[in-house]
Length: 510
Ligand SMILES: *[C@@H]1O[C@H](CO)[C@@H](O)[C@H](O)[C@H]1NC(C)=O
Ligand SMILES: *[C@@H]1O[C@H](CO)[C@@H](O)[C@H](O)[C@H]1NC(C)=O
Image 1 (cartoon, rainbow, N blue to C red):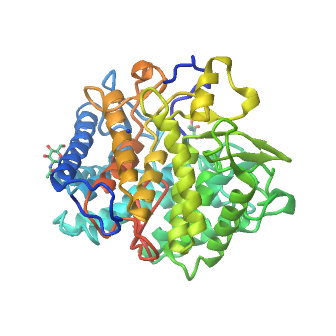
Image 2: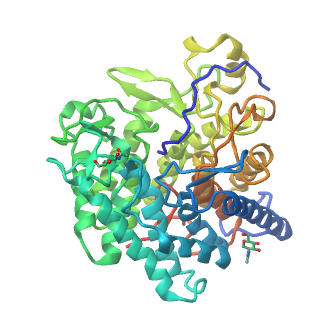
């Protein structure tokens, strides 16, 4: 999950409605991209990344993000240069030594103990800590020829440790479940009584990696202690179906405070990390895998939902107190990728096939809008279809609840997993089509802007904001889908050498 610096209005829209590098897993009869076409796509993707980097560099660096319409800057992530740190692993994969060196030079200067604003433990972990750790893993591993000065690379690990040392007081609670919203100057917090499932359960990969790289076990211990309450949820009523748990945890006791189940924002990356920890180390994290398998099976059985107008489509509903909630989000569309990763790693075709159904559902939220980009949130409750979206619901199987697009990656991310796991050219085409639409509708003179309404001509109007995950995720997954085989690519089966954090920063597996 990502929070965002924008508040996205939940709007009802007016009812406007309206597609070689030989891959080893290609099946006969599939169209194959010619090599020159694939190269030209890679160049187009690199050009888009460099366009965004150059605009950020010129108008916003070293602030957190570019305002891509006014050419101003924002500091929504404590002013430590979030876009630069988030861009690092993508720039490494693209092999751009100039940008990589610029980013590391910046990271060297950051004082992570100073900020005027509230620090989110979760966002700081997934963007800054992970961005630096991933840069370290790549530059000491498969990309070790990119930066000549190895001492410079060491800064990434030193700064990771400095940052975690600033943040670790968050875990100092009676249960060990952390506060998320921190005042790092005073060592204070926001006095919350509960912490969310995703923000609690999306720390363990990063903090465990930091311990493995530094040899200091305290970071792994802190995050795994917090995680232990999520793996063995109490009270029993907070787990209405095996593996599927509530959304908020009491910070004092570690007990769940509710039994609201979903894969939507707020819960999402908790499920994502269960299987990713197993990829990271199958021996130590077998219990995490068991929990993911239970959650995946329960989701197929109890949350899979088909719109009455399009019974061929599959979305994941939410569940609370005996009732299904028939709405979902762009954020949730990581789910197909999670089933595909779990399915391939565990050699389970049922998970793979269900993952492909989820991918297809999320693709429909892209292919059926005027821009070819999917909405922030959507529903399929036949009894709640807005009058002006009846035609959309009949044709596409969903109606739009918020038509915003703020440069989110999850749909493209799941297309990437589908491409890697099946080798079917169709999924690569879906990535390319999404990229072409984003390049067409979101691109400004200095970068990329969000859209207010993906189902209006030209995407409605634009938000003057470029989230750092444009660099970390959207550009990376589009690039990886079109670039060569590499150690950091997601692999079929259990041959993964790297595992991606929820911000698409790859860590070397243990
Ligand atoms: C790296 O990116 C810059 C834009 O910031 C571009 O001018 C340069 O050509 C790129 N270098 C390589 C090797 O791709
Ligand atoms: C953090 O605490 C310090 C010292 O009590 C205070 O001056 C500052 O305003 C607080 N910062 C935030 C973001 O609340």
